[in-house]
Each structure stands twice: as C-alpha cells, then as structure tokens.
Length: 266
Image (cartoon, rainbow, N blue to C red; front, side, top):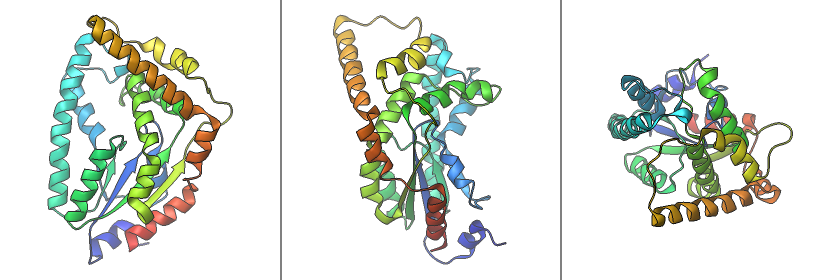
C-alpha cells in the first residue's frame, strides 16, 4: 500500500501544511491516526518546551508548580518559542510538507503563518477539533499522572483561557480557510457541568498558585475585572445554544479523514 507520505514526496507541486487547532486535551491527534502519515514531519512546540523544562529540573506537573518552577517555566517557554520559530523557518525554507501540532489560540498569529506559508508556495489546510471545557480541563488534570510524569499538565487557568480563545476562533477559521478547513467534535459522554462557578471550583480552585507576589490595589482591580469578564463570556459559551452553533461546523471523524486525504493527494 502506497502511503500518503510517499505520494507527497513523489508529487510535483506545492508542499502541504496542515495546521491543527484545538484546546489542550481536545484530542487532535486521534483524527490523524486514521491516516497513513508516518514519516510526515510534525512540528510541536510542546516537545521543545518539555525538553527545556526537564533540562531546568522543572516538574512537568505545572498545575502544582512552585513560584521558582513557574519562573523557570516562563523562561523555558520563551526559549522554546524562539527555537520553535527557527524550526518552522527551516522547514519552510526546505519546502517540506508538515503538520503543525498546536492550539491556534492566537488568530492573528495563525493568519500571519498562513500568509507566510502561501507566499512560500504552500497549500495550507486546517484541522480543528472542538471539545467542551470540562473535557479539556479533565484531560489536562490527569495527563501528568497518566503518563507517569512524561507529559505535562498545565495550570488549569491557562487551559481555560486557551479553550475560550480557540473556541471563539472556530467561525473565523472556517471563513479564513474555506474549503481547506474541517472541524470535528470530541466531547464528553453523558452529563457535563454547565455552571462556570462549579467548573472553577472543581478544576481551578484546587490548583490555585501559591506564594504569588502581592498585587497593588490597581492591579488587583484589573485582575478581578478580567476574571469577571472571562467568567461571564465563558458561561455564555457553556449554554446549549452556543454549543449547538459550534457543532453545526463539525463533521464526523471519517468525513474529516477523507477530506484530509483528498487535500494531501491533490
């Protein structure tokens, strides 16, 4: 059986880039497992980040990070972003087809990357995986323990903000990528929590950062206002009407795999 990667290497035409989008724990990789893409280059910021964390002797259990570990973690992320940018630039210069495994939480950065890839002669495709907030938080919370310490668990507040950003981006990405866009849903089975306060109590409160620097009254006010706004906006995103609108964009895993295969073979 000829793999899709072999076809890509033998084809005369534009190189391909698949951008994965979705919150932490969405399960983006499970869609790709139905395709024979072994050998296709995968770029993942997390791999560099985790390597740098290990070198700095920082536990990958970032939801329980100490102040010192949070400081080292921030430096590791800055370094990982710098090195990862170089990885992308080298890949583009080499005209290699690749998969970019990330969250695409920043719409502006994704537009910039898409433009850069197309200017370099790439065809660009996005696979978006939607998951509900509770699944994203649950997967993140258990990831470190389930991997025996080999995979990272982020601070849940970061996961929640990332989920909010990338979920809000769904209709914008559908418009931006047009025919080169597919979305699937990977959500919890059964009853889900629809009250943001209950979600915060279950998933965020147990892992509140300890020993943080005190805020000035002005800083505390801004922080409280931002949190209140986030809670209000996320609560609206947990309502059935919002979720119904999101699901309208999605298709089955099998349909998505067919579309991806068609893109790679074109």
